[in-house]
Every structure is written in C-alpha cells, then in structure tokens.
Amino acid sequence: MSLSTESAPIRVLLVDPERSPRQRLSARLGADPEVEVVGECVSGSEALQLLRRQPVDVVFIDVEMPGMDGFQVLREAGPAHTGATIFVNADDTYALKAFEAHALDYLLKPFEDERLTQVLARAKAHVRGGRIQTLARQLAGLVGSARSAATPTPPPAPRYLERLVLKEVGRMAFLSVSEVDWLEAEDYYVQAHVGCQTHLLRQSLRELEAQLDPRQFVRIHRSTIVNARRVREMRPLFHGEYQVILGNGTSLKLSRGYRERLDALLGVA
Image 1 (spheres, rainbow, N blue to C red):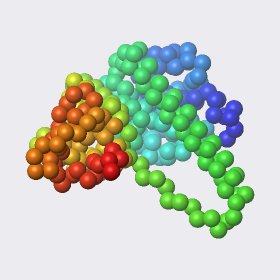
Image 2 (cartoon, one colour):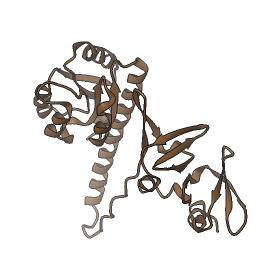
Image 3 (cartoon, rainbow, N blue to C red):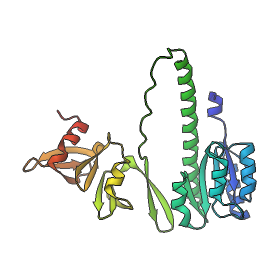
Image 4 (cartoon, rainbow, N blue to C red):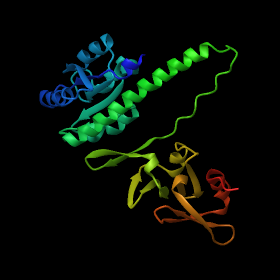
C-alpha cells in the first residue's frame, strides 16, 4: 500500500431491495468527493457476486432481503471483501445481532441527513485508520526484514473496549469510553456517568470491567469504577478510606482495599 492508496476514495457498495432509500443513499454518498459508490445491488446474491469480484471499503446493507439476508451475505463474502459494514433497516430489532456481527453502525430508516453524516464520518475514520495501520505494518515489515531474524516478536497488545452501545427508544447510540467519568453498579446493570448525564448499560459491572483498559479505569469500591484521568484530588476519611474528587466535583468513596491500585495508576508514591 502506498501513500496514494491511503488517500484514495473510499469504495462503497449499497445493498437494498428498496429503491427509494437506496437512491437517496447513492445521491448523498455520490456527492461526497471522498467517496466512490462502486455498485448498487437489490439482492443478497447479487451483492455476494460483486463482492467476490471486487472487495470494497464499506458496505451499506439492508438486513431483510429475499433469498439471502444481510448477515448471510457477510458470512459468505468474508471480512476481507466487505470491509466496514453498516446495516440499514426500518426496525431496530436486528441491532444487537448486527453489533455481535461486528457491524460498524446501524442506520434506521427513514434516516435523517445529520444521522447519515455521523455514520459516514465514522466509516471514513475507520477506513483511513485501517489503511494507515496496514501501511505502518508494511513499513515495519520492511524494517524488520533488515534486522536479525533472531529478534523475538513481542506479543500483540490486548484490545480494550473503545465505545459503549446505548440502546434507546427507536435508535442505537454510541458513547466513547474515554468520555466516561465513572461507572456505578445498579442491580444487574451499570450506570455510566458522563458529566451531568447518566446512561444505563445492560451488563454487570464485573463484565464491563474486564473489557476496560486497566491503565485508565480502576475499581475504587465494590460498586464503583472510576476513570483515573478524571480524578482531581483525594481526601482522607476514617479507617484508611478516602474520598475521591473528580474534575466535575463529583465525590466518590475509595475503599481501603482498592487504594493501592488507584495509587499506582495515579503515580502516588
């Protein structure tokens, strides 16, 4: 991959049996100079044939289609041919399944221009990021081949959760993990606190903790995880417990058993 390839237009395929939303998508994407609509398909089988001939960067694909649905198309074509996937449908029933299939986003019909702009911006960033990573790996391979073959290859860095999926009435919303101030257990759910807003996540605090970057998020109480970057100060209480004050003034309790981990993360001697 060359630098010119990294800046090449983003190749998009549209797959939708409904003419009106497909044409609207085509017109909107076709007006973007950074995007090239390489094809429009009305069925899953037609899309599969095209993808096998020419892989694309992004696929906008309806879930419900005659003969072969959107999920089947992706399984048959494989990730190497489909690139980033954005499912399109008038019902949010399939949203969870879509994200389990590693979809980049889920666009509800009829979609607004603002929502499409957000989805397109995320797709562009995803494709460009992937191209840059590929180029970096290729350059690293060239450098590595010039070194001794005996040099051990370090294990890949673990991947941590980068965004939270918020299921709201009529739509799926997304929240960057870095925006979260702190997390609080609420029965079998988790409340994510972002400034003055609170979002409910449908999973346990223990499950979520295992997906978070431990260099940024740390448990300070059996029911509380805090974003260490939001901690402004610590005030001693009684029996070795502390009060953790966040940048927005929120006060949280730090249990004695969790202090060592927070101290290490904050660089406290």
